[in-house]
Image (cartoon, rainbow, N blue to C red):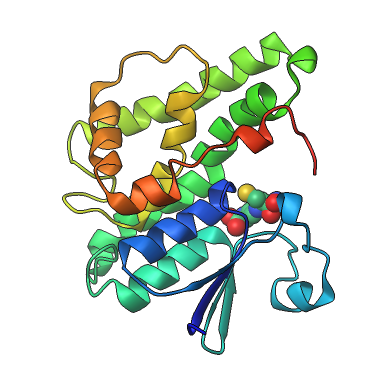
Length: 216
Ligand SMILES: N[C@@H](CCC(=O)N[C@@H](CS)C(=O)NCC(=O)O)C(=O)O
């Protein structure tokens, strides 16, 4: 058994961030499907590891970490060897800025489009709410468009964990049936990410099982 284990269903956007980091760093790990159709989130043994009762959870030896951004940041710091995780605090502050913005602002905005449009059964769609959520998301995407017009990655010149947590949204955003205004720098970033095997494996994953499904 590998020292590293990851719990969570592979069609969870938050689990996908952890898978991308593990794959990007070429780490050996055991994957344990959990949540969604696999259930198990209320298993006392799981709750003892992750009292938040959600996925992902990472184990590395005797360390347990949950919260996807903490997991990705840990893997980058522990195994990135300077890649993904800039050692200079000034450079890293910018990476953290985009990472925390993703957690607090960007992800809540775009994921609400995903829930209203994809996870909500079509018969219950609320067009006004969907339009409002798309508008709020576009505000975030325009910020990224501007940043990515200046530098190739959110943190600067190199791929970092900020690209992992924010880029994890891109496959869903680019494949949802919505009108997307042209954003050349964002699209070029998506193309750059798509050239990475780790991105394709972790992020370009079917979400068919989630369509029209508000709960498991
Ligand atoms: N803030 C948490 C959110 C975790 C979360 O919401 N996980 C969802 C999947 S994306 C979950 O466990 N849902 C229940 C399920 O999969 O059954 C993180 O980033 O890890």
